Length: 211
Image 1 (cartoon, one colour):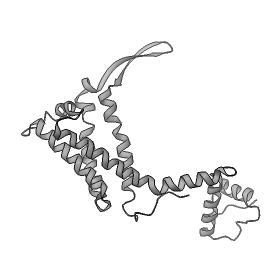
Image 2: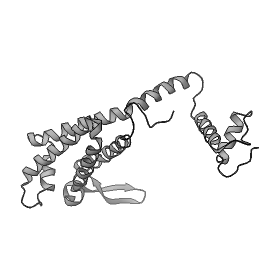
Image 3: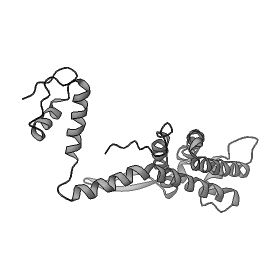
Image 4: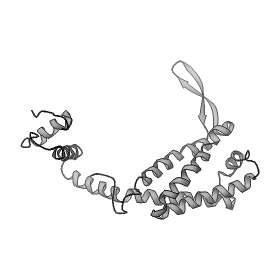
């Protein structure tokens, strides 16, 4: 059994290496060599049996190469579409936006609706061009603060008291309404934006996923 020394892989990795590669010894290996060996062992754990592994690898490589780019274009499409609906006066979220910004002084809710709409369109356009991803992320971060405000400012719109059946009876709990679910789903947008934002220092062809 190979001994684990400071800087060597964790015991589990050592065991995997010995089981998968009995001819390989960790004795005398440098830290860099150990790291490479640990990565090889980690890759072995993700393999599928037989021909399934090749198909799985092709699919994983495709997703790794085009996944982030697809996410970026999807974010752009969503923001441009949902944003342009607001100044056109046909957004299904119009009323909740108007109610949310009604407290802002000096500016009418209708004007704020237009401002928010064009703000979202700008975010979408910035996502389309890689050099402006940082701008898109910054604008999105500010926009998301306002997006979640209705959950606090409009409790009667976003929450409904429902009776939940549990083992010993019923429990009355606040449940998100359709409007609240529409808002909470923005967590997916935040996650997607974080993934795209994490690639700003990489070339367009590079991928952060290790196969």
